[in-house]
Image 1: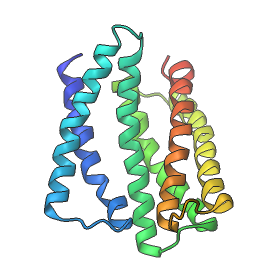
Image 2 (image 1 turned 60 degrees about the horizontal axis):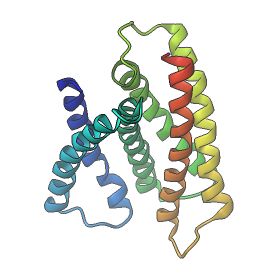
Image 3 (image 1 turned 90 degrees about the vertical axis):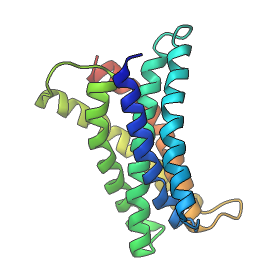
Image 4 (image 1 turned 180 degrees about the vertical axis):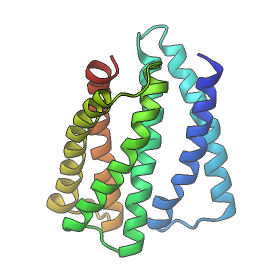
Length: 197
């Protein structure tokens, strides 16, 4: 584990702590200065600690540290995704149907821009400059991930509908989170085997 890994982890935690405020606000949490401070500081401390744990576990499970970095990037991407999605929900009060699917597509595409650069240069440690061929390969596999992500979220939100007494805003976030986990697994293996090998 290098010093730059810790810098990346702290930065990711810091951004995560700020971005989590949008979904929290949309879900009805009171965004007090104490809430902001605990979110930003808490995630800024948690992120490097979690990465250090994956580093220690990688001594027993080969590749676990790389997956830990991928998960940290994925967590940030998730909050970029959820942050933009919740901003659009806050602005329009739309939580389902075709507009929700369009919002989910926009939020997911915003997150993949971050994903490409952080995964290329930090997670997979590429020292080569970005190429158009690599970018198109990344975009191709990410597009499949996007289709998986949007389809799963749209199915959960628009077909299943809110379950267990959840309100529409909570259920929109549940659908988005489940979709994110499924597409995260797809993306890790696709990027590792076919994009940044």
